Image: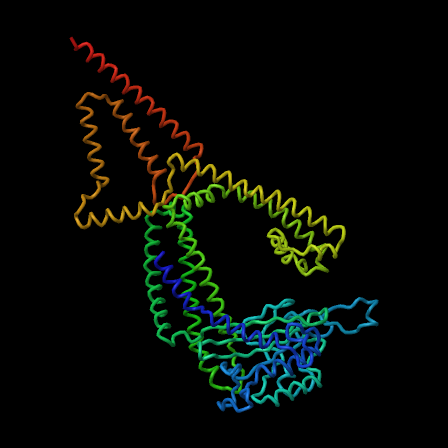
Length: 592
């Protein structure tokens, strides 16, 4: 499986390259950081009102999408009136703008306040969504479009939004698009029921063979204002173009072959060792890697099929919106699965470097103290979550780091690492703020973390003491290499093969017959056979390199067996000592 992991790492580096980061950075700088003309403080990130939103649409968005002239005001390209952003990135199709709304009276106004407010628009849910046409009711932007069942939902800051809604596409002409924005603004396309607006478009850079799928999101929460977010996906949908891509394809085929081979080997091990196979942590990691690899291959096949079926249709009509978001969404999940698989493949390297004493002691320490760590973790998280709940309830309405319970949890981890905003929590509550901070640092940082280090330190001392008296890891790379070397010599007939079980059994029978001929009684022979069985069982238990973990503490039952074994050895040594004394007395009497 290690060889397959190396091929998998080769495939991974073929999926991601630095151009993806630079393309995302250039596009985000253009559409997120460009300020509105005449107002340097307003860009997409700083939009807080509907007026700011329309300024962005008519300013930075419009100027960023339409690049039809060189910097000398000469016509740049004449390719079906297609815009080329930064002169290198072709705008595929036309951009699309989509909004989702909620109905009026989706929430209840308190009776005493109904005279002041007779309209109520709740947060967005699929049940609260407004499906009725509104406004001019002429063009598509005023009529509701049913969602596509295959498109993924969008997870925003204040809601989860489905596809569909009130949609319109931009024109190839910059002036027509600007007039469209003005008309929508004059006719109040954005209403009090508006909860989110999506701006979607896709680019292709032939220089680096990358698609950039961009989504700008403006959420309108029920509290008022606007919260902006964005997604930039640079993906390589056309996988096999250059010679290097075909090398990657050969690596993918080789990886699939190795995957089949190692799956067969693991299945044979399961049949051979049965339940004993699942006692090893490394075997569980092996099974996890196999499952992840099969999921990765399945995702790869699915993504390639979808690209083959959809890419041609999306590129046919340049006057319509090309929905590449679906392909980019699943391609991103495919990359995430590959990343998780490679992570566990690197973790498995610990198994093959146990020949190093330091690394072997590290893995043995972790496996030995796992029970103590679990007990400590329960106590730690009880206190940790108690402080997180306290911080959320006390500072949640005023400090961004504690605005949600999840944010409070991650904020406390940052406090442990030294990254915190003490001034913010002190300003939120001048009494409970300092008390919370001081007690959290004392109990979590000074007490609990030092307890954790003490557990690790004590266990490491015990493991180091065991290794100092001869304890060795169950799996050693040196033993594996030596075993392979001996097998090769046996196959080349340069070394005699080791004795099999039948030969050992025959020799054992010969030794018993020989002992009887030499005058040993049956009690002595049975005692010797019992001693031999104990010895073989103990050697198999403590020196086997096939199934056992790196390090296991001695249980009470095992200690009892070892004690009985030592007692029997003492009896045998006493018996041998008496025999030697008799022999020495006979020899002394024979001397003149």
